[in-house]
Amino acid sequence: MKLPLLSGRQVHAALARLGFVEIDRRGSHVKMEHPDGRRIVFPFHPEVDRYTLKGALRDADIEAEVFLRAVK
Image (cartoon, rainbow, N blue to C red):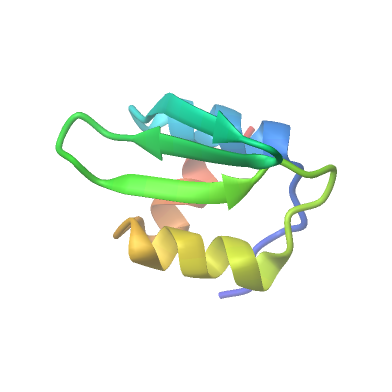
């Protein structure tokens, strides 16, 4: 599945809707954690590369379809 081109702000908002909270921000990278222990790190850039986002979602065990429903 091809992900849309999203900004770091949109990714952050979608993950927050899924229950993730920001725990750290170093430089341009944001680390978020879910209450069940899953973590995700992504670049907070004007455009997040689709391949990078797909890998981050895979590492955090978030299905692309679930993430896309949270994007508004």
